[in-house]
Length: 478
Image (cartoon, rainbow, N blue to C red; front, side, top):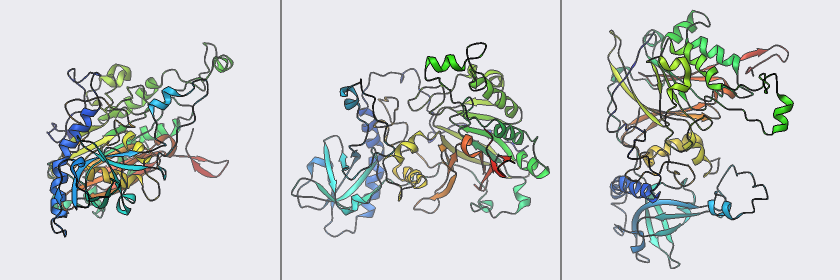
């Protein structure tokens, strides 16, 4: 079986574990915005000076947004804030009549009444103009805008600028063997190292795909399929589980509980009291042949705020005794090395999260034209992986830093918890910086496993379904 090993982290791949000094909830969230603006502002200014150096009128940088002069061309840098009437408002939740059930949350926050503002330490300024109307922005993005103040006190935007993709995180690779389009010959592929990524196993739910999970486990263990399938499985060096591994089934009422109970007060055919025990059984089989990295997700029994901390190893049962089993934070960086005796050693930097940041940003933008893949690519240009935190995405109240900044571009960026599979190779302006973006679909609804070649960054998928003879079609077994 192909092997890879975990490398030590660098300054560009910080840990998301919350230590004792940071585990405090007495600080305001304004500290995060301050450190975000401070950390990205310099890069935005560098890009803006290069972009607007030849503009007629020689526009200059105004240090604070409230110091602009009317009818004078200039550019400013600040943090975007979207004033959206449909966005959740905690004050309205407190003031509403609790005797009336609340309306269901909207699937989208965007509406024609939205306003875009730019803020810094001095205050806020409303942005107007056709250029800003067509921009795909979310709250929390740091950017520079070129324009002038109108008579009404708004700032009319004629152009805008972002920090751009950060430099590639240091890695070694086979320059001659790089083939992001997957055109390498099959002989070479047999010695390449692959990693498998899955998300949304949803063990314990009423629709948990048990048969598909069995097939997935047997495939990864090399016990399923013919020779070709076993050779393919042998190239997989490790498995990453990107969130939503379990889904607790909660009875909605005592009457329903009593009507469905069995001998011990529950209907075991529809409800499992130990989803983590069942999950541990699957992981035990896979963990005996390859390392596993598991991240918590939105539906897992774990803290809800980002960064989510690792599962306690004790709750994972026998698999936790394996040294190759790792409980990770969400999000997390992984630096992997590979190099068989006959191949040149390589190292890759991988960023994984369980999908909450992308799912939240998707609510801010109309789709179409925005897509999940285009939004994910924009986070690299914004140099921030979760800009909507802490506005509409819960996160820890950091007071000394913003941990979600991109200090470097990873080689691969996985996002779990998505509706369907998608991938793209994002390229920087220099033509050398690149990042393979991968949306990992929910396994419970799609039965899809994602495979990535660490050397060529080629992406493949494997689907695990059963055949419904009665309906003469392939379907997920539920």
